[in-house]
Image (cartoon, rainbow, N blue to C red; front, side, top):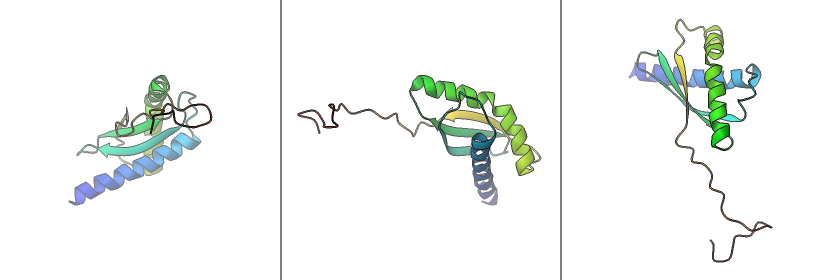
Length: 118
């Protein structure tokens, strides 16, 4: 039970530190508006799956994901320095499947739904 608690606590620490690094230090233009929804660590704490949601269409999301993966080494180095971890997990950025793309409802000019709609 305590190892599960430690994993959850470390995951939350990683999430907060990555958010801070993305805001302050990562300058990659491919990374736009991004939300880190969860960090899942392996049992041995050597791998971290980081679930993200990037604002934009499918191309923008893929571009954002490539930017995050490209910054992975930089982020690992900074995480090791800021969190003072003996071993920093390998970061694996993934799009969060729980965020469904917004389906723009068919609306007429003026914001009114079409006749016979909702």
